Image (cartoon, rainbow, N blue to C red; front, side):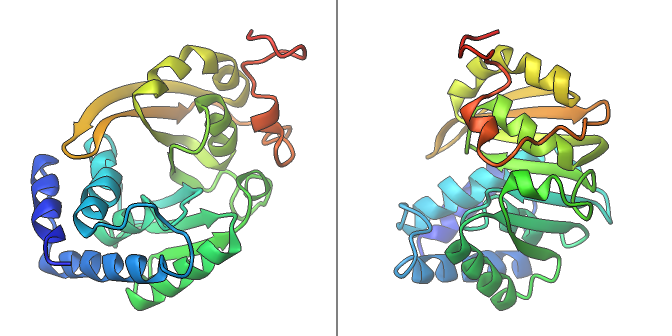
Length: 247
């Protein structure tokens, strides 16, 4: 377990971030919780501590280069899985509230356990599909920032995320280099649901490879038509017409 810390510190330094000793201790405890629990529930295929430090923790913190939260902000991590990027961001920013959204009950049970063990009073796991969450008044248009790491095509993520954002809020999509090719295909979804891409930031995480961060700002209210029922966005993305052809 000891070798993870050097990798973590190197990655954090490369991102020009400052992590306190208390926060570092929380990352250490989160790492142990994650790997221990992973023996019972499949949370990650990465089990080497140094790789977890880079490919999960440091990778989660790459959004710090494009996101500057304010005290009292509410953020949401869609499809958080093992709590990534939500838990690392909640550790780094105790001044914000982070909702950890996950649809798999066993993973939510881990999130509840981890949040309690880490005393992360600003992190709140929620068991729900993203489409259902976007229709609930306590979550719809309530967030300053929404994060999503991989998961689906950008057009689908726009439909998941924009209904949850306040006006002017940002959807931050964390994708591999292939995400660049999804931008043009997502223009219909952006126009219909109410967003505009304000930043595309390619980067390389040493030891984890190439990444691209796509920032979408909500620029008009989302119609009550969206999000569509569970599964529809993936089955019929807004870059396709009724015949299945790209529009």
